[in-house]
Image (cartoon, rainbow, N blue to C red; front, side, top):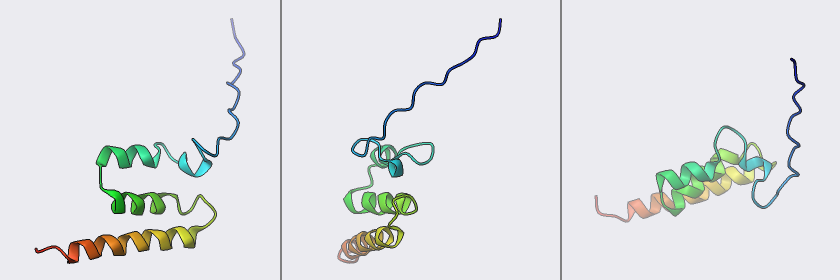
Length: 81
C-alpha cells in the first residue's frame, strides 16, 4: 500500500525567537556560542560574523564585529603577558 505523505505545515515566521538570519545552517549560532562560553566580546564577534550575509546589512554587521574585536584586543593589550 502506498501512502501519500503530507509535509507538516510551515510555521509562520517568528522574528523574535527564530528570525531567518538565526536559523541559516545546521545549528543556531547561539547554541555554538553557549557551548563554547567565549565571553561577551568574542561572542558578539562570532554572532556578527556568522550572520552578516543573512540580515541584509553586511557592512554594518562586519563593522560591529570589528568594533568588538578591537575592544577584545584592547583588553588583552592591557594584560601583563
